[in-house]
Length: 357
Image 1: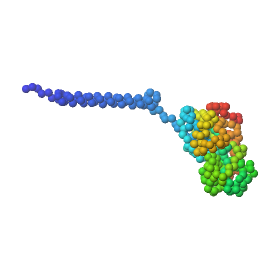
Image 2: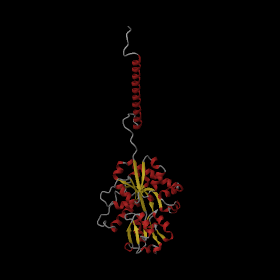
Image 3: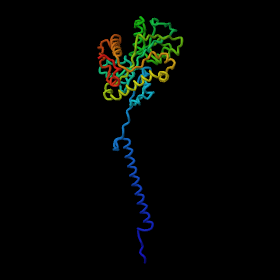
């Protein structure tokens, strides 16, 4: 009787070969996936060791009112921030005072403010907000009034209601304009409103006049037509738009501050060299007719610098606050020696810094 082969022939051998083949295939696939994972980690880490993924670049936020943010708007539009190796995003804020508050609360990194905001905040003990550069000089504050209420000139404001926004250029301009035209503060009733509220109040007739900047001036004049009158005098006040940061932020991010400043200098050059392209683009962003912006373009001077006039204006306004504002009369006027940090602009372009020693 022939011997029978058990367990190693026929279908049993075929099954063994199949299992062996599947095992080998799975091992090969495992090795391939492992190698792929290592290559992906190496590419992400950039160090060839496959251990540390490359960190994403940090994004910084700048914020402020549109009418004083022309340089950062253009720097954003033209890609100058990216060219300087800094990622930024804008956060348009209604007023410089609100932008200053956002800097203090760390909601934004770079605040576009006016010098008046700095003059006020330095009365607060421990306020560590500092200017790193001025970016714009402006004369776009004016009083828009209702002609149909009998207002044709400055003296006609006596006995009328004037809306202002306290602690802003609206406030400073109104005070200086009235004084220059022989109108005492007590002869005008003032109410404190935000710019959009001022605009609505004048148009609706809830107030007789408002001290406000662009584009709210334009909006009131457009809505009222010949029922409105505009009272302006560039000679009574020059406002300074500035970029301010927290002292701690500047100390921890010096390269980011310098990159931001370099991008603003590029924007200044572009605005001056290509006004026919810059003005319409800015008008669209600011929400004002391009023809109107061209007409009032002389009210703005985009210039990245730090000079003695800026510091003198801040100190003048510090004294004005002490003498005229409630709650400040018993406080010491700040020296404002820490209001400006010229280090970063000086390292980028020392010729733009002309502060007193």
